[in-house]
Length: 296
Ligand SMILES: C[S@@+](CC[C@H](N)C(=O)[O-])C[C@H]1O[C@@H](n2cnc3c(N)ncnc32)[C@H](O)[C@@H]1O
Image 1 (cartoon, rainbow, N blue to C red):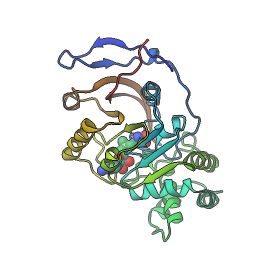
Image 2 (image 1 turned 180 degrees about the vertical axis):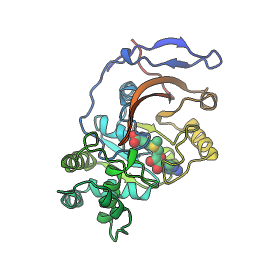
Image 3 (image 1 turned 90 degrees about the vertical axis):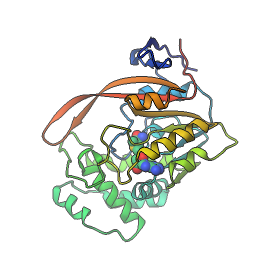
Image 4 (image 1 turned 60 degrees about the vertical axis):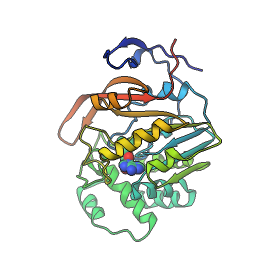
């Protein structure tokens, strides 16, 4: 079992259990090389090194992700016995289901072979009305790869000729992801509450990544998540018998609402890029859990 040393400085005296997570002290643990096949606003791909100690500090044989998005943590973490992946977004879940099945996965890969990204293709595909689930996944995947920031809600053209993942790699991304999704992975389109509240005889770890509380993500997702939803989530996590690891934007309201749990602050640099500008931004988030992570 990996061990982790935290800087034990208390950030704010009113929240006794808030700690800063120092990336230089996190020992690497085993990870998987499979990459997410989608781009996604709020993806935890770049923050996964901070999540690592949370899965590495406990024993569990069932993984649940109630707010799946691109499933960055599912793909990064070595697979456990059972997984349950869920999101409320119908197109997203259809795409995951198509890729999880070997036959439909191969059909999809065949359909995207030799495609060249262009603004014309992007506009055409946006205007199509898919008639079956493979066409629906084809449309979703292509828009996602060509849209600015992978934003699927009112998407804008954003494919970059060198910085974006090139189409000759798309099929392989789908293949690798699909193989990992194949066995003992349940994929559902339910409310997150069903996934958190379902009991199990297994030892369950929930990785919970809801839309942000304050930071503007309204444009990012097809389904809005309002104050009432955030409070319902809080209440379900307070009651749960499962281990959970929850991520949020760093704001006072969340620190207060979760003062009963363990709160860790993280900061990391990430790149934003579109066809015109590339810049670096500082991400500030909270990771909240109902168990302590190992410290050296
Ligand atoms: C921050 S994103 C998750 C990002 C993901 N962790 C990743 O690495 O790509 C939040 C997700 O919650 C989903 N969502 C919003 N409301 C939901 C609800 N009531 N139940 C389930 N999923 C919901 C959105 O569709 C979106 O995909």
